[in-house]
Image 1: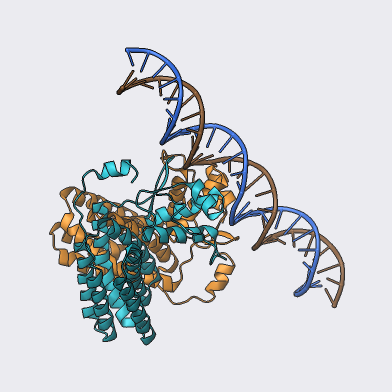
Image 2: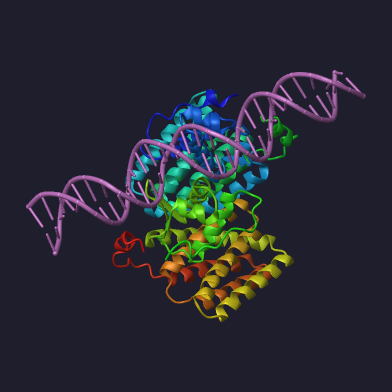
Length: 237
Length: 237
DNA sequence: CCAAAAAAGATTGCATACGATTTTTGTACA
DNA sequence: TGTACAAAAATCGTATGCAATCTTTTTTGG
């Protein structure tokens, strides 16, 4: 599997930094699992792909490594992150700690317009669940993450929001790697329940629902150490 | 105030990336307030200071901007961050949300060796409080932050720990900017209380003490918008 | 004397070049 | 066939150069 086949060009929105645009593209590709964990992202290849010099490509990869989506090894290059089960556990521990609080904050600030946005988000999720195929599956994971990001944006704390972006992106990787069945439908109904609680401004309920929701997501993971993950990684697969 | 006068050379520990070493140096300088908020950090100057090319200096500044300690404006350069009162509020809201949880986690994992480390940390704090002068004051803020970082490391979640490093660093900036009196002595006694609760493994108490502690720190800030912060920034001071 | 325009200077954004390190390929030998 | 080693290729780390942009100073006109 080659990078070239998996990433589309960044011709669109970019009056800002080009490195940032490239980062966003790569992040989407990683979160959507078009780039498998462990895939090598060479500066040269990324550069030619997006038609920039290695300098800019390097900056983009650096950013992704700060977000934990890419691992950079000195003199060896950048690779799509391959989170360990332990890392996955810490990730969800972090979310358990933070997201109920975010949900509570969101509950206190949510507006009617926000509710409309939530409903639209739920619809989107539902659509992907109905569809079949791996593409829909990816979109489903993405949409599910977007729900949590929407909640974070409603909470109105930019610092926590940025942190949540990191956590959600890394969670998508973890779910793609260790996810068992599809809690999908289940997760969707839980999202719906959360929106309902938001609407009725029951912050205690929102917080509790969110906590359970995260527990359910993590419970669906199979975090037993797989036979030879080192080998698997050594094989760069 | 010039950068050159405020930063010492990075001759020490560096078999790793040079950019990282420079970042660490600059971060210390910013957190210690040897570099005032708003100070311009030009790539060229940083480069010559640490005896590297602009490429490496630029990478270090980029890292600091990800941590929120430096603000980079396109085509204008990098400046030491100048957090707004609103940003300060969000910062402490984040800490209120996270640190009680971290304290609880730490309580469940704390060892005898950790307690020894905490005691040493408390001693260090006490020493700086006893001393007079602006240098001691800076060291005091630093030491106070280190206490929180030590707690985060005991909690054993690498993801939260890295986030706390960011929050603590930015808090130091905020305290330096908006801090009124010295909660210092007060804060020190609260730290002592937290260690005591840790020792008796009372996780509920630890969590509550931490929450109050953060409240006290924030209460000491004067977050009223100062006359012409825009002006102050325009004057680059 | 002051305001606006123009020129000079400084700084950043980006591409490219080159040495250093790693990885791969090729070949000889057991 | 498989291993050891050496050469070649690829990739990274970093310095440097040039164009674009911003800042400061000087000049010009009122």
